[in-house]
Length: 400
Image (cartoon, rainbow, N blue to C red):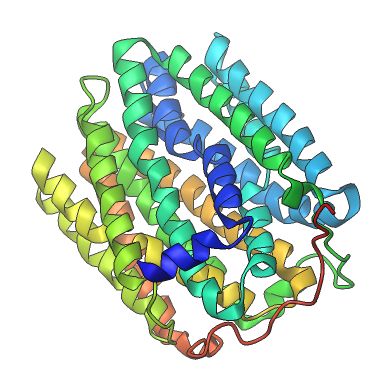
């Protein structure tokens, strides 16, 4: 814990963590909110999964491009423009009564314009701390993101069951607006100067570590999305149980972050952390009770934050600073494609065989992530001594 205290005392770290956390908070609300809102409107989890897939797919397509634009338009300008479009589209989903294709289009617009807060924050971190402090910071960052999945699902489920899904989505969009603007107005965000990269779009994917973590992130986050859809389908609109189960799972991820946060990241670390996730999700379809699902998701999530922290550290240790935003953009895109495909597949299987279909999708994806991370472990950089290459100097100009 002293390591985390040292990290938080560094000027600029706590405010950056807090602002990006609020800006991304709706991530934990939109998934359940859209599933319940669209399922209620069309009486189909497949339709709900399609809208959620459109949002995630749109974000996946856009993120590598928006991250590259940060060096051209300026970080603050880009964040404010994308926030305005994304929030307006989500309000449209919440307030309009329309055919399914309209919701799909609005979902895609929400995703295409989603502000790249995560890649921006992780681009800033190496400029705030020493190489030695980066692994604990990435672990702390991933662990704090689980607050999204503790409060987000509980809040959105409570709003849906106590008021309605329209109000729930409107509240989520409002949170995104406030948080994203706050993050964009931070001095360290506004003064971030990213040198233009000389490489072509997608050239960073030629690096084996970037390809590896993109694929593994796709499977890890996609697996969680599939499992989440299955858990939501168990309880539907009948009560807050699904939100509480997801919150318990998020607590497991926080525990995992505390356990693994200060540990050295070796070539086997990513596979081990994915393996914990796979074991928990594989057991979930066998225990379809509240405490059974809560317990297995808790165990699975112990590997979640540590796996995401390892992915972030591998990126920093593999690419030059100018290529960091795009690299994180591709990683985010991989994760979002995972959400899109696994959510859609889970929705189809849920309609066919019941809620267990979503859990089976989640377990399968997590197992594949473990196998791939282990087989290609030698593609990772050696991080036993911390990040191998420090970023170049002074991309941030602090106010005088």
